[in-house]
Image 1 (cartoon, one colour):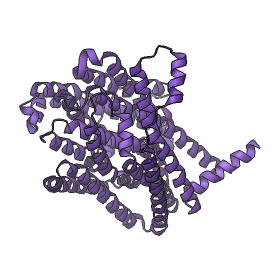
Image 2 (image 1 turned 90 degrees about the horizontal axis):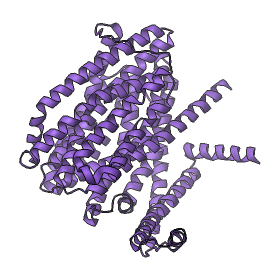
Image 3 (image 1 turned 180 degrees about the vertical axis):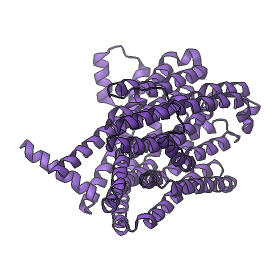
Image 4 (image 1 turned 135 degrees about the vertical axis):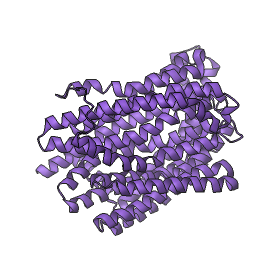
Length: 545
């Protein structure tokens, strides 16, 4: 009974965190959509903005992940051993040293900012604006570091909701700027709004930390035993996690040297669309799974550790394989609805839809890599993820350079997907060597069933999409209701309502029906996730009756 209650509590926590993170990611996505649609993709300023934001994102992913991955196990292990004083002293040192380090890194970045645009075509066009943009963006690294440390502390104390909530206010600030001040201050103002928005991610975590009994006291004891341990763990983690953001930065840098003026913004948009959609699920699962992995590894309960890893991996495949298919199947409909307005042209939609399909091929690899990385970290093994990170980066760069000569810009997302899938596959092999067989055959069987269900789903979605595209939906009911409420509504508003309704129907009808078909198919094939959901629904219905 106790185990069952604990399982239900964990499931409830994951569910709550997932809902918050999905909302958070949707708002982040909408903020990208807002400024992309508003400013378009052609201007040199919006492309420089997209380029400049990549620099703090590298720190956000690399040092942020390293801090979280190190803070949680060390901080949590001290708490579990009853040594709260030591845990809090460790937190004091981490906050102080990380702030000092990122402050120094920001100052170096500001001083070296004039050098970075020289690697791109911005050295001759938009150079001064590029330097200014970089100098505004670099100090965000300080807040990124604090954000991740605060998240690690709160998660270790069992508080998962606020860490999942952090990007909601920042997204609202960016969205508010675009609609209220975008016309007046343009992309230059967007840079300032972005700085303010991203800074709030750390600041809003201070109140929930103050609700605990932890109080920060400045301490710079880098010789502390736990700090030395953390530094040793962080170095290989930094190397391993650097692959993802450096790959994206490499891709954007290549795009910044292409003849097409809008390629940086286009690639950034597509990367964000794909990553925001799937990382909400991936991070909500790993945020809860990693502490569990760490606890099982600390108890040397390898049997349950293997079972837990397989369970999480199965969930990744169950959700991310159909997500990949979905991105490919409804790519044009999705982009038409969310960004195909104002300055985002039909030609932009066509190009972005192809890029999205190619990036989507790596979605499953993203999920698997995140899970297996954390499995290794919980086992105090940071070497293997670091090695794979270097391999992933090398594969991405070499394949990109090779394919660029054959298929042009499309080689960039293909290379990224190939590299991330390669890294995920090798990590699985290394994990098997590390802990022994952990249900690979069972997992392979589930993947086959999921693949069959995805094929069935794809056939249904393609058929429905073909049928819907033969018609234009005029939204008579919606227009009629609006005209009754607002009798003198302008023809422009009516036309917009008709377009939105038509595009929404062509996206959501096949997407929803496809999801239903996928779920039913996996249930028929007895995939555990679908069976469990069905059982829970039956129990709830029986209780209501």
